[in-house]
Image (cartoon, rainbow, N blue to C red; front, side, top):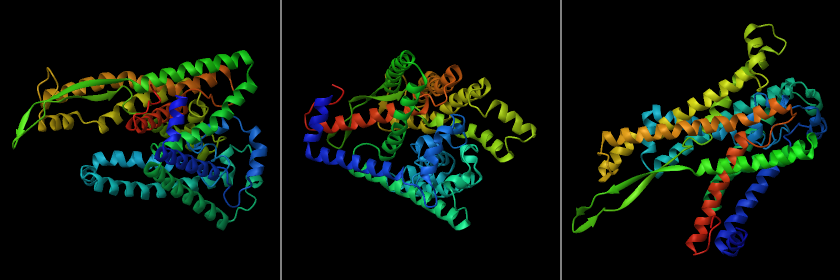
Length: 437
């Protein structure tokens, strides 16, 4: 692998792409530590030791993960890639129910460019809403669960300063989108995925060091070994797929013979990726938001119910609800992104068939049968991986987020595998041995 990495840098065009990608990622991380105007980041860093894991698991915990800790520092890139992810999910869902978007999706590159433009507009609108919410929470002290007084890190709280911070954070989101597109066009890998990967990796060393300081050497070693085993299992599940064989009959077009080839339809076990975890996490933050609006000292029965079962994130009812929602969203997302009837019709149109299955409706029913059987273990796998940090926190009582498991491991493994495959494809085009050989 190291030899292949050296050969990648010896290839001029691939080396330029890798260096360009590293340069953009460096600028991205730099923007994650630059404080927004009117924010005293030094005061925040001095008080960070007083912020417990419960404080970091509030309404915007997922945003803080995808911002690489920039949210809790109120940096220029505090929103991270979360507005873009949310906008992309919303557009994908609307594509199923809005005929205009569905027609654009079928128009090829021109239609996809239009959908991308709509995603950008929606991202900016969501960025304004999220930045306004974050500034409002920071102004009232709710962002850090009142662990740090707002006057410490935000001395000037006039309206002009608040508007400026919202504008800067929204502009930071626009710059992040631009950086992601630059990496996709001129670098290696998917730009937005690599930005997410960079932010998650940025928080990983701090989690490891915190775990080392809290636990003994033997427990730390056991956890690291278990983490490596978990990563191996995640790699296995992410690579697992069911290949449906497809054959195309020979046909005459003019004087030429076409078809007669064999291929396959790859159906992954985890067809939905990390999207169900994001869906479930976003919905389960709503009870925490209700508690924040009503106040933790509120006597309202709804606030007390949410505070008892959904605020800490380690209650069995919370974890059971989280697991069930992930499984449900996995089936839902696969159902709207993979249409067996459409795939069967396209196969029949071009003379393709699955051996032993009649074209048309029987093929669609067979694909739906196989996809359901694959989605079941895939959704259960997602639920178990997502619950690991909560189980670890509840069992060990650690005062920090568990570094192995959950959203972070899924992102690191998934994006890492995809990027390595793309670099390997560049090397194979030049008859070089790839990473995975």
